[in-house]
Image (cartoon, rainbow, N blue to C red; front, top):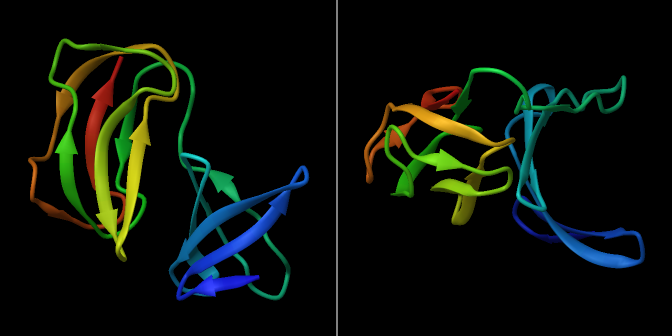
Length: 126
């Protein structure tokens, strides 16, 4: 059920959860429970895909146009699965980017206060 512009309340396993949605129907960004999904929600129905990989070297990218609020890591830092790497803000909502697995930060490609476009590389993990 809609709870505001781009904000929905949905029932998951008997609990009410808040889900944030942005973007056009052919390229929706969905933020739920600390995870970001991207999908095509046109007439053929949803085909969501996770934007994060969980093995090997990878780059965390901006899920949507956003402002970098806080960067919690620097190159050489070790992170564990689920740890907040940085905090973004988009459409008046905070978007924590979490490490998809245990890794070492190889590079940070942004700075606090920077406006980033969707799919902009933000952090490299090894």
